[in-house]
Image (cartoon, rainbow, N blue to C red; front, side, top):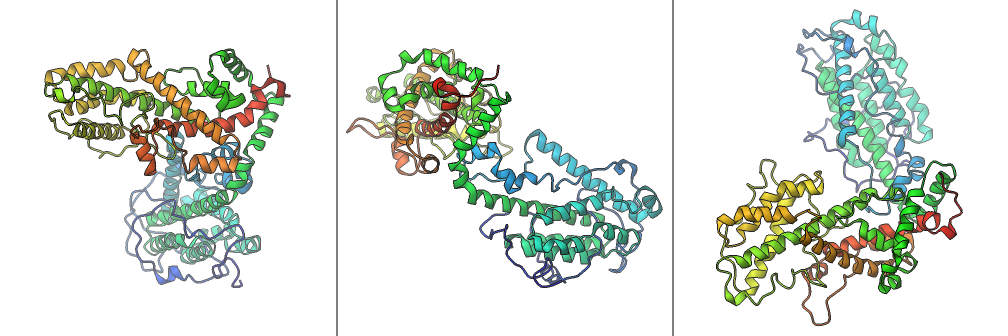
Length: 631
């Protein structure tokens, strides 16, 4: 085969760019230095056979054969007996061309959910999906495949006659199915001119025939595969390929089934990573086009669904009609800022408040997760404000508060909740309050409370510093709760720990702790509480003010410009009156941070404008709607 073929020198592929800046999707264990044979594998015109992949089986006790006495050249002499009949049933490899088909560029371009999500996430990329119940099932099926492969290889080593009776030279056991999947995946990664040589090099029926007669040369096949992968993968994958080659070679030489299975697992993992590299590069290249076409694409997509009766927007239209009936309640400022979207934006701002139990209209199907996150972030911001207000009450009632401080505001001016203040949280690009799990695994929330009790400060500057320290500690404490917990449940779980933490920042007698816990329980996450409603109303008013500013600035932007502004730089928040002291959120924004309300307003304006551009003319505005609604 010539030097430009599959086994030849490294060359760039038309559909595979340089990914040197990419990080590996999966990190392996500490890499050992690869053999020179792995780094410069010999090219062969006809590889032989390669056995299995898996890595969780019980190690096989075998002798110490010479390199010539390998698994592929003779039956082994293992003393371990295995129940082989449980692996007779056909099991698909965990990674196949079909399972990776969604990474094809055609699927990417025509995936409506991806088309929508790419507008909101600058870091959107494909990765192996091992989360949730579906991910656990996927891992269980993969484990079953690798265990079956290991069992079948052991049977080949220890009971060749039974193996041939069960499988013969057929293609219905794990190894040939695995090799076929490897070949199919590689065919999607190499140029068309190399596929004939791939067909020759990975002739699965011929390889399995050699395997049946004990003539397969696994080391040559591993070398050939290493050459192919290094010719077409990103350079950062070379160490992973070397590790795969070393595992297959060592497993073959030492008659170690488990090591062979590990090598096969590495082989599939490298191929999956290569497919992900290509797909993620295509996303980066196609992002501007996909974003620019989002509204037109979704209009065509849903208009067709509506006409075919596959999507019923009746409930969404009724929801908008109900909101229109309340139009007289909207202030003139909303109409000036929102224009003909005033009813709509007032309504979506109301929907993300914690007290709103109305389900989101089905027209928000692509944004339901983002709307739910906004509602969750609003609950967090309101509850933190409640905690700070209750702390202030307790601190003022504590001994030692001091008459010199009685003229101060209950909270420092930069943290108090007044008409133009921000709530106390910090923000990230995607979320106003990031509550990820950052505590040590063994530490409970209560054991993590290390702030000692202290006398209440008298000087305003000391009191302000203490208040800021308390707020930061409450956020950190919430971060110790699993991020997957529902928001209300997280607050309920942490209630007593939060009460204790707040209590330690006051000089209140210990006898008041239980009363304070009860006080938190009455108000935190309790939408029926008058105090909760008061704070929620204030946050809603602030949100609408910030939303008006952002919609007014964003509404004439094109899709790509809107994406850049909304996911990159933030617009400044509504400030205090001239000469007033700046809020902490304003000072934080000068350092690259935002307050929670401005951040939520930006996210909601971005989401809301894209939604309106699709569904406004399609469903909400009857005079522009030429689509007959399904009954």
